[in-house]
Amino acid sequence: MSAWKLAHILTFILSVSAGSLLHTRSAAPEGFIDEGVAPSNDNITLRFALAGRNASGLRDTLITISTPGSPSFRKWLSKDEVKSFVEPSSQTLAAFDTFAAAHGLAATPESRSVHGDWVSLSMPVSQANALFAAQFKRFSHRDLTQPITRTLSMSLPAQLVGHVEAIHPSTFFYTPRSVPAEQKNAGGAQFYKRNTTSTPQSCNTIDPAGAMNPACLQALYGIPLTPIVSHHHNRILLPALQGRVPSPGSLESFLTQFRPDIAPNTTFNLIKLDNPSFNATGQDGIVAEADLDVEYTIGLATGVPVDLLSIGGNDTDIADPFLDMISFIEGLDDPPSVVSMSSGLDEADVGFILAQKICDGYARLGARGISVLFAAGDGGVRGPHDNITQCGDNTFIPVFPASCPWVTSVGGTQGVGPEIAANLTGGSFSNFFLQPKYQQSAVKHFLSTGIPKDFPGRFNVSGRGYPDVATQAWNLQIFSQGHAVRDAGTSFAAPIFAAIIALINDRLLYAGEPRLGFLNPWLYEHRNAFTDIKAGRNTGLVCPATSIAFEAIQGWDALTGMGTPKFSKLLHAAFAQSSFVRVC
Image (cartoon, rainbow, N blue to C red; front, side, top):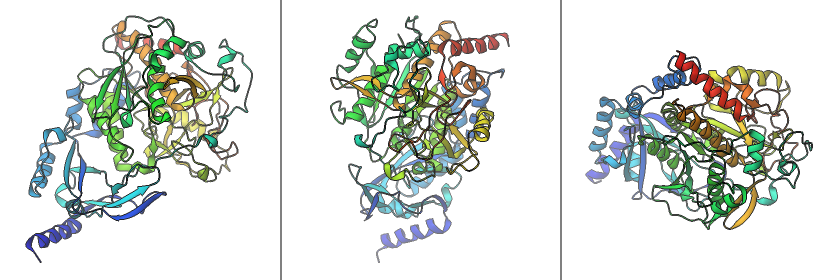
């Protein structure tokens, strides 16, 4: 036996015997096929999450500065102040770099995140197996474009215990879910057909002929049309995965049709990250996602600049873009005031450790005064998208990042006079994150009055409940790839609410006040600024209306949160709190 092979085996034995189990799962998710061990000489890039100085201290600080009544309310942190909480200690950096050097590995400056808490290393699969007691294999899935390399367990060598908190990718599997058009149900159209608001009847999406557009939303939520001088520190950022970009000409057609008072050549600022390969004429659903984002932010947040962050990558690792997006925003000296994103994953697919690290990243953005919004998903209580095979399974599937307590999760409604919960709207309770204090009283009421004692649904009653708020999500009009179409999903709800928050920020900043930042403690203090949604069931986009699900009730519920926004009352609440800050 050669000396190299002997050393290789000894390294493997030592790493197993002295290590600490970090990631593990019993099997790959359903639908993945084990194609056998990954070739030993294949290269794999692993991302290491290094322990920060005081991550819990940052979370505590964020609650303090985002809670109304606090002396430091909305005194958002600078980039350097956030860094002081999250950067690794010199001991952690030394331990990691020493370990890497001892095994012939080195991290370049480009492979380190802005605050140094994520570091990437590339190595052969054989070395990754040996160093981390792993067995990387190739897994295929019918809905993935190519196989992925993953392991079902991974351990830390003794030298890294206490210094490395996560390694990615390891046991992370992204389960793609496509929804065949023929499976989509009627979205809850069996409910009320009356209209008692000033919103035109043509906007009533409970009627199959009804359709939503900016004018409908302005009437329904009281969104102003008249712009003020947009503040240069106020803009919306729209991250777009898989290199998505809007289709050419669609925004101009949309503005011409639905906002003729806005110059039709109004556009967005395109930012490229991770070498995206642009394709605006590919899959309809992928392109439409980018189209609706820019159309409903620019079409509602009059005068507010919009950035579209097109992030490269493919469908084999959806977690990387989440990490890269956070790092990109953290590096900005003048970050956006609002981030709206509509992608989501089964919480269990992400795994607790990686979900915790990503969620902490959103806390860091919130501490900078950034409102981070995520769509609640389109699968009701059964994940981002439900599947017909799941309809009889009463174990609910929470959606991440919507389940993260440091983001504002936006559910979906339909109809007017009254609005009801769209049955596609995602909503449930996290299995990873505890219920934050800011929502405990609201959730307690729902659990005690909205859940029958014999309710067969299985969910974590102690978990973070979502969504927090809701807006329209059914039969909205867009332009995509040269065509006027109607679409549905909480992918609309998030940018609609983002536009409302951006307009309020414009007015706050114009008056010399700080922007809204992390929203949730403030939002839950002002439930009267929302229209309570009291009807609907979130059975999903595919599953029949008889499937087990939550029902909307008076007060907060796990379908529409606190309800849909009343712009004037939210604006008043924002300035009322700002006045409090000045007095203090």
